[in-house]
Length: 388
Picture 1: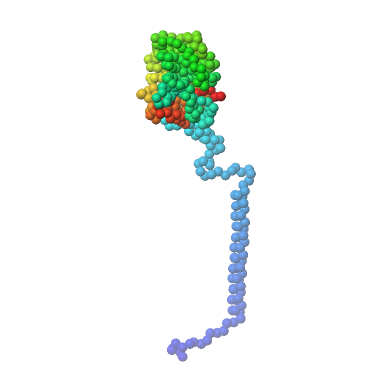
Picture 2: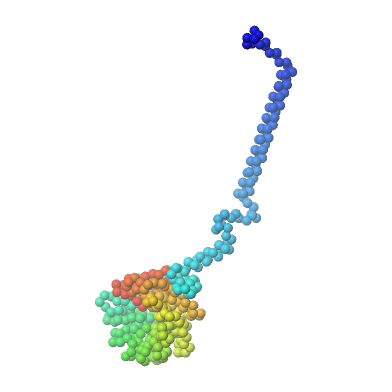
């Protein structure tokens, strides 16, 4: 019924032409979708192939390509620079803090590279002065490791300042066993002790010539201390220095042509050198400190000595060719009487740095300080034997 909201007349049926048009539209859309899907598949396949090729190229570079470098600063250093840096670091590590001495002294790494292994000088022995409770000081020997200590000179003594002959057969020393200080010699075994000097004065600090035929020593037999020479038999005593000043503690150069010693002829003690003939006196040190106790290195290049400043004694090295000085020890104590190992890689010395006077050894580079003795009284004045 009209006007009352009832259903209207039924729609007209679709014609065959309309249905065919709709079918064509649907088929076209399906073809388009299929074509789009096919294109996506093809694109995906191409992209995957390229990625695989890229990966293969990255993992297996051409032999002509330079090797890949790390993004870190270490990886980007050229090989030559890295090698040079390694050498510099190794060199610098041989200069421990505190052993380079006062401002103006060269650092320890200015010294030649030496074998400072723990076995350096193996086979050599060290003579030194020590005493047992209730006895006077006597000459002892020990291995270079500090083991196997043996006393060579019996009581009463006291005997001191041992000096091993370069041929290894004898040890010279000083003793008051006959009333005043005289020079004696004995076999390296401690047997066959013989007195070399016989003078009312004090004769001390013997040191051998390199060929073991002569001995230099200090004596005050002319009224003041001088350096004297004599044959290893005790004959042919000669005054070498003949000066009013105090001359002390001689040491022979390895070639036997010169003798270094300490002298106060210019006020403070300095290190001097003189030909073994008594000619050509040369002053080597001229600091405000007291310089004494010289010891010539086996190669003849360096002289180890003690320098005293501010009441502190330390060991220094002097290059005898250019007079460059290097401080070897830095310690609030008295480091005294340096003695070179026969291979020149180590220096023994005595010191009170641990309260009691004991013998220590240090590499000639200034590294590896080692205590050798632990004596209830004291151990001092080391002297190395030649390597057997």
